[in-house]
Amino acid sequence: MNKSEAYHRKMTEESVSKIIISLGIPTTISMLITNIYNMADTYFVGGLGDSAQAATGILFTLQCIIQAVAFMLGHGSGTFVAKYLAQKNLDRASTYTSTAFVCGAGMGLTLMSLGLIFLEPFLRFLGSTETILPYAKDYGMWILIACPFLICSLVLNNVLRYEGKAFYAMFGLTTGGILNIAGDYILIEKLNMGVYGAGLSTAVSQMVSFTILFVLYLKYAQSRLSLRFMAKEGKVYLNIFKMGLPSLIRQGLTSVSNGLLNNLIKPFGDAPIAAMSIVQKYSSFVMCVGLGIGQGYQPFASFNYELKEYDRVKKGSKFLLVFGTIAVGVLATVGFIFAPTIVSLFQKDPSVIEVGTPAMRYASIGLWFLPISVACNMLYQSIRKAAMASFMAIMRSGAVLIPVLLVTNAALGLDGIIMAQGISDFLTGIITLPFFIRFFKKTPSTTEAKENL
Image 1 (tube, rainbow, N blue to C red):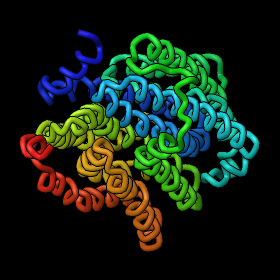
Image 2 (cartoon, rainbow, N blue to C red; image 1 turned 45 degrees about the vertical axis):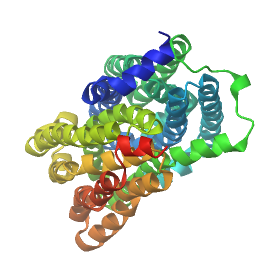
Image 3 (cartoon, helix red, strand yellow; image 1 turned 45 degrees about the horizontal axis):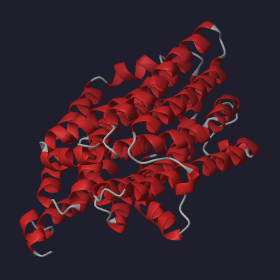
């Protein structure tokens, strides 16, 4: 039995929960490690003061922008890779992989060049104050230099996931993450290189991750990476963009929201910015559980939906919602109960802890409702309902959060800002739930679908 046939049998015959967990756990681990090294930056830089730590929060927005491009290409191409693997059309799958990879390299070089040229005004736009700016420039320069490597890494990572090679995708990212943590310790703690060292460590780790993922892709992937597979028809580029748009919106609007939050909170000083940076990192860490399992669900759902195995897609969707709610709920509860302890791990400044504690608790309450919107978003993206998936993506990252930020800030000032994310997550969960239910009511059973062929 060749690799294509073995993968086909696995996706259509094995236990639904087993497949999703086997694909989702490696993805969750890789995302957690990636967030742990972002948190390690926050931890080690925390000893340098509020302004230095706030700089990591400012640059978190830049990283979201870069990831938005990468996930658009990776998810957009990966959805079609899964589709064509279901059809056993390896050449067509290779077209989507190669096109996304080359586009990622080109867009990464463009972002790097423009970012370095306009670094200072860009960082001010993201919310840097005069005291934060020097640190943000030191860190941001390295983030931009590594930009092409990060985008291409995430494209390869996502394609490997959609091919059912989640373990290899995990290995590439986690190796870089562990290296970054070690690099932070050496460059910041031992060599006293400060924020510059944190940025350098991040850049080197991302280059190493790219190298590992590139080698693993060439060795284990079913699709192939070659310039001869680059798409010549515009439809391929449009398909990648259309199906990747929800990911672009999700990450891109997160960047816009973070930038707005930083600018709204700027008048209150560097300490609140540092506090919100810590809360964002912990929230992102918790989100990885929901997103990681969801990204394990996506290749399964996309593959089975293409084959009209609708009963398996429905069963997988229910499992994703229940598992995500329990896993995210446990971590959210930890964040709520131990909020002061978690914030103080990263920054001992009492003014940071004072703002960070209620902000962590409000965010933790909102995280309980996160699995609903994540499951709904990933369901519609996986079954190639781009418009619906894009609508879901807009909800949490922008259409709800931005108005909530503006209203709560106008009404309550700083207190309103720290409540905004929790309120937004709650409202988004309530809004998206009916769309999740709609899929189950409107989608026929597997037997009905195949009888109508």
